[in-house]
Image: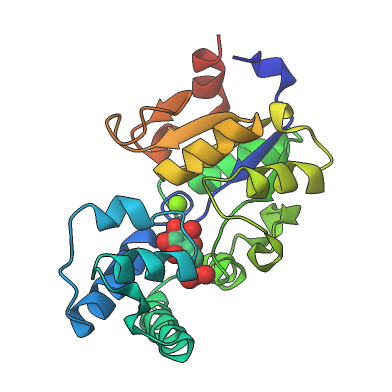
Length: 223
Ligand code: G6P
Ligand code: MG
């Protein structure tokens, strides 16, 4: 584990870390599954976290046992329907939806000159940050449409560090998803998991909730 003093930047996942939009993604996928008469399996919730829209649809269609039954046009239509439902749910988003302690943590990072980057697979990320009123904290954001591979591939975290002018090893990556923690670990950044131990066993540091995210608590765990 690197020393706390080597950390110069923080790479943030968005959904499920900065705000609880992961439940809206889940609701929208669940509704699509119902529409397509796909049995919603409890493990879908964790499996779909951190995974792109297209790859998430593939997970659902694979569960039917005949994923090739749909044309490319139909698949594009399903992805659009899911996104429309998700966007409708985002209408309720406001600064009150920011995860506990997150504004204080971002403020602390900024005050201490840490570089702050966004490593979200969501094409809706700019809109979500805008609704939360947090856009100005982020010096760099990875555009997920430019990536070759999604999480658990490390590309998004390596790119985010690069955009901040840092090596991954100089960064913390903060994630709520299994695929995200794998991606951070593979990039060489220090993985900080937010959530339950059984789900995030691979995280190098872990907190139950974002309320515990402070530089002092991180320093303690990096000893
Ligand atoms: C994040 C979320 C996923 C979501 C993905 C793509 O990684 O954790 O649940 O599927 O972004 O989001 P989008 O808004 O582009 O459909
Ligand atoms: Mg997430």
